[in-house]
Image (cartoon, rainbow, N blue to C red; front, side, top):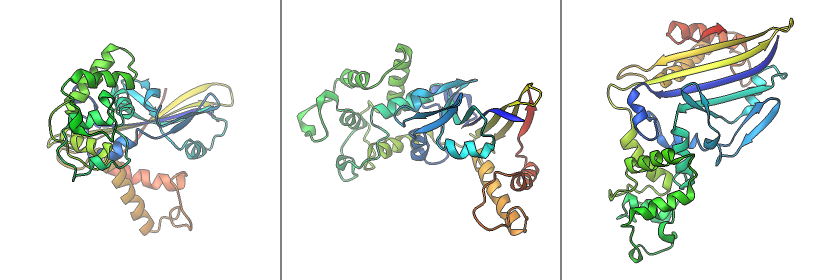
Length: 313
């Protein structure tokens, strides 16, 4: 058996259909900072036998349609390729899925400087007195004002000046995307006179707003979907596509699907170690890359209702 292709994508999203009506098309059950920075990594994947490298600045622009979502490659091609134990594979991709439109909106936030984590003295809590619109203007240098300029010397009363600067910094695929992203920035409140919650740098200042707007509310739950797809070539020349798929809903007012899929798995592995499971009781650092380690964990996970369904297409 030869593995010609190995593709793995993970989708974690709110289960509410209303997510398509807000700009990020995403909600946070954990740190918005961590979630956004995960979309600001460099990435690599193997395509038709060639390694493709993508910088963190360009990652969101490389998102590709995958069914009803956008697929984004993730880092660490080397370890993932080795895990397959099939060096003959021509294509190896591990990625995340986002609602369609999320990558282009995050790309705009990157271009505008909102994912910058460098400390800014004027964004310290002690500075105070800045509105979100003023913070946006200063970050993107609207009106040609740099960070050292005195705020008393200029005004941002003309919203068109902010939009004109956004047009200079961002590249939109069409006018529809442009209007959607600018409307999304307005929805977050970045054009408003609302006092900004200053947190020392642009990213954390933005996250203060996202925590308020996009946290899970009572009665909402998340959905995790994970799919591995392998294209296999057998010795007689025939090809077969196999998929292994997980669909898991979070509990209403209980554990999220992400918490269950990660936390329960870690808990089971720990218990098996304590119970003396032979495959886990060996010296050194062990990774779940063999059936000896994985099968006992998978069997216990199925008892908890966490199961991947395998199909041959």
